[in-house]
Length: 82
Image 1 (cartoon, rainbow, N blue to C red):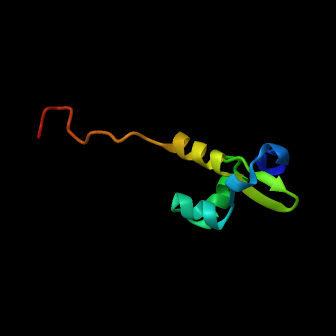
Image 2 (image 1 turned 30 degrees about the vertical axis):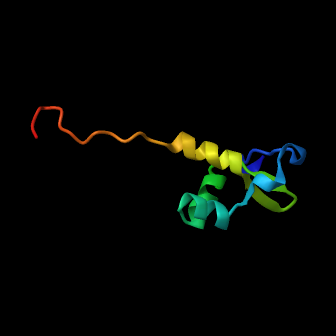
């Protein structure tokens, strides 16, 4: 598929867990709509195509969030200085 979009069979997706691509996904991630579009264009997040409409499955959005998680690190110095 063009743009690296992963196609998902419509019957395999629960329509109740689909997020509107632009506004809802951006709001959920606390980002701009442009960032969501870039993720989609770069193929960094799977999308569901329903005719000409593009949606993100909430499960895929959750997986993207989990994969992007970075553990906090302790800001203490390793040389013993306080």
